[in-house]
Length: 107
Image 1 (cartoon, rainbow, N blue to C red):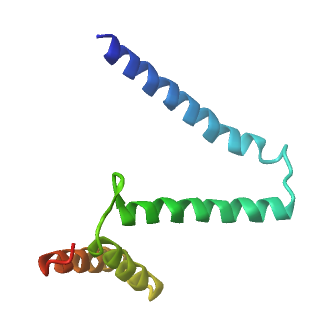
Image 2: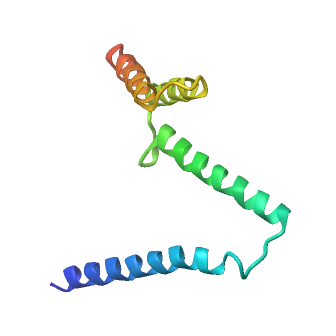
């Protein structure tokens, strides 16, 4: 029972914290000023973080290499996105590439 209670408390604390952080953005936007260089750096840091998370997911399962089929599917998806394919087509091409390579025995 205590683990369920701890889980509930943890979820509640995270929910409240997330709401407070989201609320702080609009409230503090006009009170705090950030230099243009810092703003540009924060924009780049966001992109770098998202790319790092995506690449980690593309190349690894737990602590092991995911095999070549998954990164190949991601690469095809990225190329389709660069050529401005609709998101459904991007996902289908990436999944089909990975599935096709796995069907051919490429791990």
